[in-house]
Picture 1 (cartoon, rainbow, N blue to C red):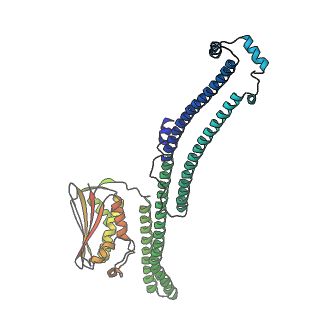
Picture 2: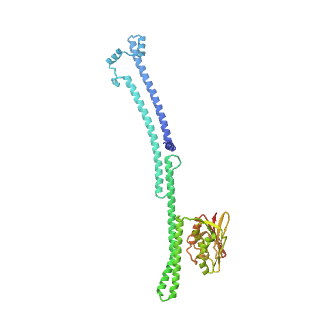
Picture 3: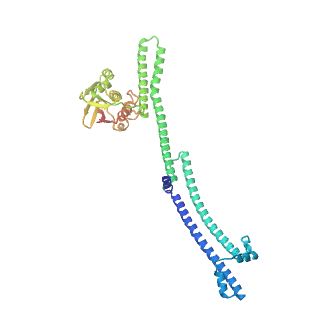
Length: 412
């Protein structure tokens, strides 16, 4: 309770309200003191006037001054005196209006009481009205800002210039609005990404689907030509393989983006990892008259997810095969230092133009010089996501028409 009260008095308006209540209490006490002093003075005046009237009446009737003084200062009372007052009608049941001095005192007391109550009530009402007016303005401002939040406009902010419960609540609401804004931006970015992704997928699938349709038509029109059937069956297989690779790459990238993939790192030999990555590529390299050269210490080890790292390395080698002419070579080498392990994939192919370097890791990006090569433009993007997902770095250096080198760096 004490903690809650200490938080409440940090509010600026609550501080002012508390200060006013303390001031009002002091003013009420001070007014009571003045009221008491005024009534005491009035009663004193009336009693002296009453005593003066009695003394004057007795003296005019020849009563000695000594007896009059004794009568006025005597504190005791007797039955004869009470009986005399009773016969005069001066009892406790006597109406106030028939007692002039008491009636005058009552009127003065009533007037002072009403004036004091009116003044203090007016002051309290003014302070309460001011407090409620300030709170109403604050709440109206908060409602306006929150209405803009509801409409999706997060440019305005709730007032948080002071301490206190209300402003802590405003701060919490502002934090919630910031989170909603971030979620809205994320959703918008996801929507744009999905739109671009669908557009790119449609574009990438359009070519193999058109080819498949054409191949089917040709095979239907040439049912008696085994050579034609065989040729276009082979081409159909290639188109289907291209579509399969595209969809598998998109699935892997989506899983990486959503964080549904957990890299299971282990201490593995680099030579075994490279051998696994190149296992299915030696046949393609031989068919295309290209050479795969592997160099590195067989005992070098790397802490990584071997399956995914081999996938990334295989994508880099496939990219090198795509851009290397016949009789060219792709060199896969590695080295280790106390700080990091590096894997280099170097080819002596076409190279990458300087203006393409900043974009080659973007999804579906195809440079003007590589429009006639196979692939959907996802391999490098997937490789980068895999390497960076394991806290590694993937970089590229290229000399056009000379060589291109991709470097995978894993900090130790």
